[in-house]
Length: 219
Image (cartoon, rainbow, N blue to C red; front, side):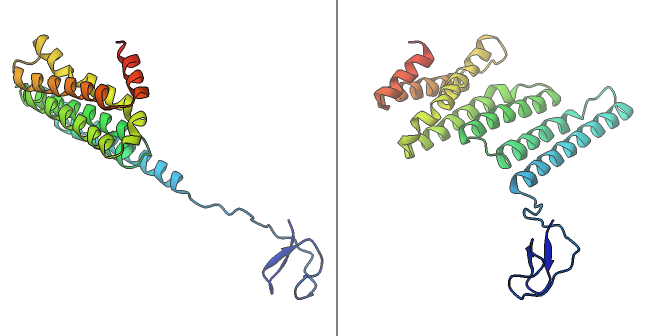
């Protein structure tokens, strides 16, 4: 609370303005040293909550309409998968400041889940498990590898994400041997690429990175 001079547009504790020397009114006015403003973080959080609300509204509305109209045919699954993926795409990949490696991994997992849901809703021909998911894992591993090769200093930064992608590369083979998948060559190709990526990480990285890789894989 200070005296305010309308001529000079300043606040002062003195009864007279130090600039124009006019006597100031005895009425004190609030001095807002730090005006309230909307930061980028606040806007981003609001956008994320808005997207979450819209996704919840769309899914719940679709589910309700599906139950009321065609309870024997769950067509709302066609809405569920894309909406959940769009939610992750906007809130985590676009709006968040998460690490690029984290975004790639979450994109692979989200796309795989969405395509699996669409596959199951369309009659479960398992095209997502046979072909698409192995291709996505291979493409994501290649993408992270290119980032690391272009900027070798990021080896240590990306080692955890590279390790995760290598592990995911063997997932299609596990699905094949567990009879979830019946087409071998996409799963085998993905596992081979994951193995070659692991070997390349060990051969071409620095000694400190080699020790880190050995420690993570318990060689």
